[in-house]
Image 1 (cartoon, rainbow, N blue to C red):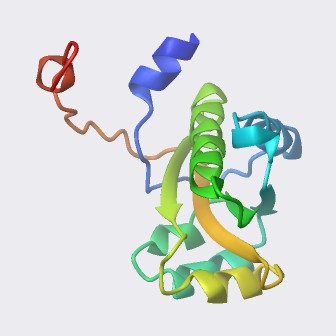
Image 2 (image 1 turned 180 degrees about the vertical axis):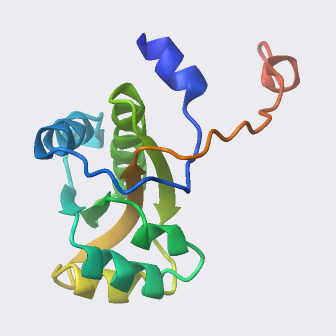
Length: 163
């Protein structure tokens, strides 16, 4: 699958089978995340790979709108030091996780963390100190669904010179 096919076909997946994801694939996905662009080369992020079923159940209990966390065979938490552009930096890293997962034939779903009421409890559960922010969580697994969500048509979002 080409990079453009990955970008154009990636969708959020919330249903997974129970087949584990190899350590090598998880390492490669995090490697892709760490290579994301970052303002002033700050690289403020840390990545926590979570495969333990109890930890995933605990996360699902904290993040109440995402019970599928408990069913995904793995997830990756993106945490960050606070820098002037940590939101942009961690968004780029999270997007790279989504795209790398698709390239590996996996489904994924981005779950917000930054500024959410559960963020501090998740940060603590993952053992991160108070200087870190919980930015996002991405569930990963072999998809048992094929979501087809309509995207806005190119003609409705593309403008030349002015909006």
